[in-house]
Length: 251
Image (cartoon, rainbow, N blue to C red):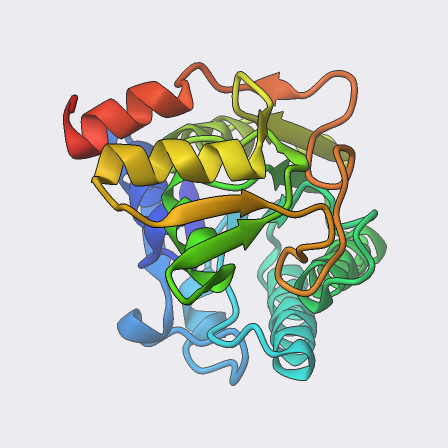
């Protein structure tokens, strides 16, 4: 089966392409690096020719509110139109847990628009909403740091290893469309400030972390329900501490 992975050069995309190839499928890593651009449509029709499945894991190069909306809206419209023309039978996207709830975030509003476009396209689809990746915790800390102090919300998160998200996407891509949304999360909820302390301790970073209920998460006010999944998500098996031990070694 030919499966085109849009964003196939990124964190999730590379693992997904490798996994699909190991399973014996023709997985095409499509990104601007490989001459395929969903925003400009460069190489898009050629890449999708003969494809049965498209998996869109591309991310916006800018998180600025207007730019991120334009990226997801334009790329999704182009991908869906190209998919219909090519006879694609399953359109899969990676979205974010909280995209339908956290309206203060320009990024999450843009992901909600992407989800809506997919649902209205007429193409059979599956949407996988994932919680935050372990691999992104460093960027969250950086965004909340000023004068060597990280001020972060104590709201619960339920982060997951990127590889487990890629594995779930591979399974979804190789099965029939669900025409619905699936959530995936890590095995345990952790307050964001505690998550940051664990990460910094494992890294040997002396920065202090202050819990602040008013601290925003990339522009959004969050609480325990904002970025955690609903009642019956798929759960990964890797715990955050195990991932830290693997990344940094036991200290």
